[in-house]
Length: 235
Image 1 (cartoon, rainbow, N blue to C red):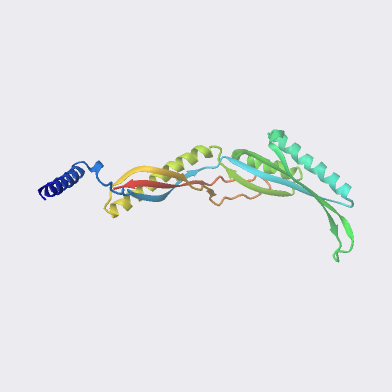
Image 2 (tube, rainbow, N blue to C red; image 1 turned 90 degrees about the horizontal axis):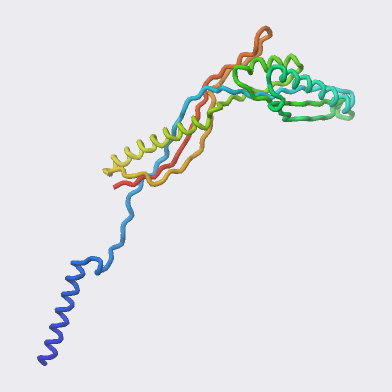
């Protein structure tokens, strides 16, 4: 009986010792489930104003003929005259690109018979903005009866977009800081950045033909925009 009591007493001492050891050395006890830190995810946007320095136009000519061959031959001659005029105005032939050639029949009012044919040809040209008015004049004087443009662009768009991205990240940090302050947290390190969409949005511009002077092409302003989605740690 005394021996059994001694064994039970020793067992109890060992259990207590193990419990104390587990408290003293947490790694030997039951591990606690880790808790995820607080994350703040926001979107930011940035905008950089740019002055366009390039303009592109589509110059076209539409011609009539009694037969398909006649219409196409006449149109080809007139289109060649436009290309030659643009070359004389200082555009390299490698920068003059044909964008459309078409031919279709013309019919009577009742649509029962073919009365002739119509052919068209369009070329696209991109040049410095300062030369664009003179190019329109040259093309029209050479016979262009369709002018589409200008489509204005900025040569240094990649660099400007990089500046807009930096502004977007700064905007995202400001928003995240406000959220953290409102929640009583401290904003931590930036964990993840994802680039969003960008688009250039030009301000409306003015272009009108005048007989006695070059066509005025106003540059206006373009906005280069960038967006990012950013995740910050917070505690």
